[in-house]
Image (cartoon, rainbow, N blue to C red):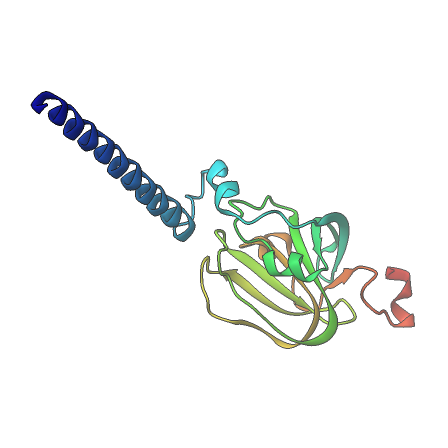
Length: 193
């Protein structure tokens, strides 16, 4: 009887210790997952980029022209963010943005805009466009992760984001014009359209 009781107690102890280990592993897994959500991946870790980012939002790419007053036309490949989910996600969770590429945010109304850099790992030039496609304001090298509001300094119908420093490198300036169907053009500018 003493032997049976010892085996029974030993079995209960092993069972209980297995339960505690399983519980402890679950807690540790939750901590790891929680930390992964709070701490963004390093800039050179593309695999972690997709792991911590939300599901991709459907966007499409267009080749657009910027008519530069001082340097002539420039062609850019831009993703179009013309839906609320696409605008909300923007360029968050990206580790890089190649030269000559960007994202055009198109809005339904013409009003003052504010952007921020929440969950944005790379510096960006944020280019605000009037309803006629003319660049009205450029905020250069927006700081990654910053929650500071970046104002358009006047109404904007669209916003173009390119990599930090690209506006200067490409010669994009206030007064230049982006060509796209969403903008209205005066009849004297119809040859640009």
